[in-house]
Image 1 (cartoon, rainbow, N blue to C red):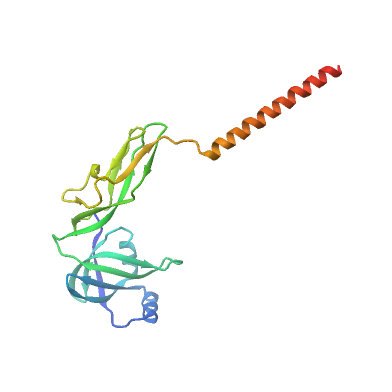
Image 2 (cartoon, one colour):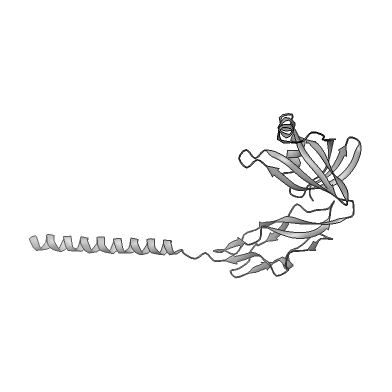
Amino acid sequence: MADYTKLAAENRTKFGKGAARKLRAADKIPAVVYGHGTEPQHITLPGHETMLLVRTANAVVDLDIEGAAQLALVKDVQRDPVRQIIEHIDLVVVRRGEKVTVDVPVVVTGESFSGTIHVQDLSSVSLLVEATAIPEHVTVDVEGLEDGTQVLASQLELPAGAELETDAEALVVQIVTPRATADDIAADEESAEAGAEAGAEGEAAESTDADSE
């Protein structure tokens, strides 16, 4: 299941790039909590603990905002494109027992039949699940599957209570036998031609030597 942990947060009253830089320098991350008809609440989160938390997709957080409890789902993590430092986090208010739609990663396990490979067409699928029971991933086992086998979204084994939101006919994984590329074929042909020419030259040289004797 997705991480479900507590974080102590503080209300934020200063805004702008300068204020955000000062927060990050103090190992804090600016964030906003919204949803369920509530007014957006601007907060700060502890830097290190939050960075560890958001390594997992769809993290659910039990916020303690200066003594007020609030359950929230990490909706978006904005990072600096160069340094990859977290600049801001959006969190959506959720309630225990409530179902939410989230994108869950697809993980492929096992080895397909000898001589084949698997091609993953979908890296994630959309599921409707309880906010406090979001799976970390959905697994596709390709052990022993043969060339031509296709795994559709409808064939995925989902956790209890989860509902598929992605198109049921969407192709998730297919098993194929690798084919030589055009470049590979051209290279083989060139190599064969070069070998034939070298052989012909060698035969000609031997014939000349024989004649001179």
